[in-house]
Image 1: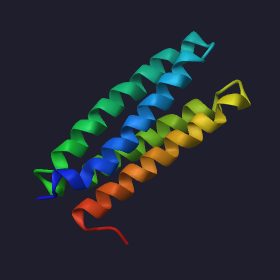
Image 2: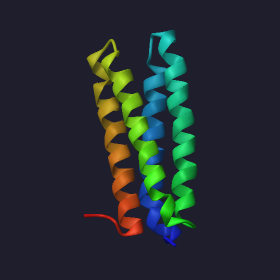
Image 3: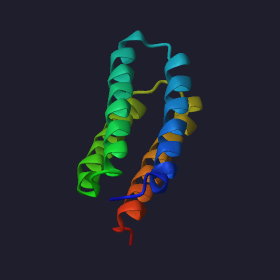
Length: 113
């Protein structure tokens, strides 16, 4: 079992991700992108549940990390279609948050390099 507090950095990174996603969504002028941002928000909720599950089942870590990878792909699709450079720092921040989450999970379950 991974101690729950060892996953606190992962939870913090996902909270930061959520804040960046909210800013991104609020500033988007293309309503066609809204469903993709909602899908990313739903993926975030799934990732949070997956991270919480690692506390009782460290074997769930690979699935949680796979979820983070899928979210990274979603961010990439959104970023490539973005109409303004001003939002690029938000995309970068979100990708960094996913990386921080993955690293925290790996440390918590003892698979960090």
